[in-house]
Length: 100
Length: 480
Image (cartoon, rainbow over the protein chains, first blue to last red):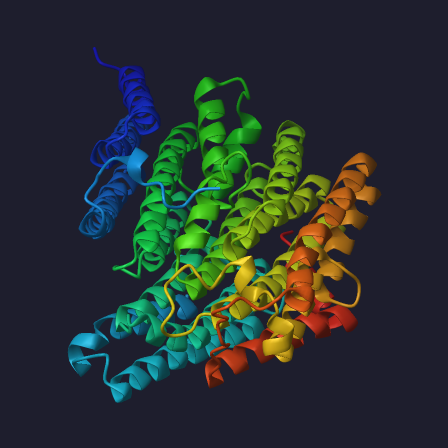
């Protein structure tokens, strides 16, 4: 029997992997993917709770989060392409014009 | 709801206007775009005014409790309106210099303001999250608006990565809070927190993650890293809008969150906020000392201002909350004014990034005494010295700290004002005593810039000399 605890643990693991990815990876595209993992962890939690509590609000919230994640990805890739045109890199370590 | 409708519909129309009118570079088309954006703001102002009259101190909720229109929300909405009005007024000339005159710019400003409306009024997790993202996504694009400029690209990318990371954390925190309360309404979450066990790991995790995301958004230390980069690389009018609009909106959300659902847990979060506030004042003020780029200096000073505002919430009595409202109002006008002078330094022909440095403002008093004098007024106000508005803001925050017995905090905060005076007056010294740089930039003035300067200067001086009406205005905006 899979209970909502299982979903919560899975969501927590996904969020942890995503956070570690954001903090340790240098490639901007991989950082974006890691952020998507955290958002999906949130979605998983929302849907699991909605099922456990037997109500619809959580599912509606998850749909909103999915839509927003798509908007975020498109804006982020747009910005990345603008940067790539001026400086051919997707490595976060080489983006060093602005500091201190 | 009407102000948001007005902003969203005008924002969408302006966004599409470039397709309808053809090339936005034609002077007539650009003036149409500017006119339509200003009309949008005028309609918003009118609907806000109508709501203010209809409200009469009461609190109205709509969409079965998803948004709440009260004095608090309307107060912050007036601030957002001032911020976007001033931004639009100074942008016309700035975009002309940069050669990036696109209708989307104005559309995004209106849409960002629409997002801010929902941050200030939202009382439901879904509404808050969508409003936050509407504001943040518009800002990511605006910060990177100078597409050919590497510094702008970099600033946008860094702001985007950290901003989206904090949004994702917030979504995760919200999902846990939803699970604990079984509802997305802030009111139900408050009830669940009061009834529930504080040692419930799900609740603790949800609260911790959400708090981190909120502190990210107001750029409090240790989550401030994005602010200096985003402020420096963005087009200067966007820096102005970001530093006041985004900060005020995030503060509105933070206040509503900490006072309504978390009000019962004051003992738990107060020490945390004390630490964050002291860290923000320390890191912001100390890092600002060594800056040579004006926008970066203002970014670090704005981090320290976030610390001062948090102190009002630490005190938490009526004076403190009124103090935060006054502080945000004063900070809006003053910071807009200071960044406006920096934006006016930008003129055609020179390379970018060469006109926002301490060297470029050097000797400004000889080249343009009026702008130098105005800059002094804004810097005095940012530092919090008496004849200007900044003093009133700081006075109420410090007063509330002393009233609630946080004397040590009040002393620390006052000491940091002395540090702030040091680095603000370094700018004044360079303006009046410094030699003008070889290729000294000329002030590029326009009607919009002059009107915006008039608004910000008048407010900075009037609030300083005759604060009563503004204090009363702030008083009706308290969350009760």
